[in-house]
Image (cartoon, rainbow, N blue to C red):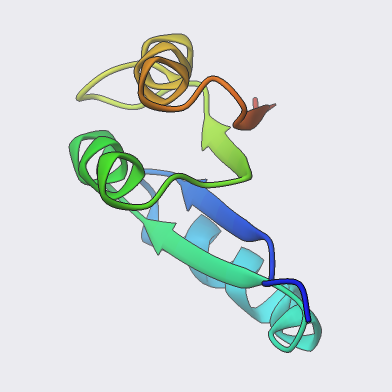
Length: 86
């Protein structure tokens, strides 16, 4: 059996992450989802075990979404990135 796709969600607003978690709870059996509120933590997690998909917020205080995606892609060029914007 193929492993579940690993999907990363990064947003500095906990309410957004919680909304995504609730909205996607029906996919728990099919997807391995990680929800992080700090871009630096996302980069560490990507180096430990790369994600198939990263859904990231554009505006975060630590680094913006473009910078985060560049860092994620440098650790694994196959990660597909999706940007959330307000």
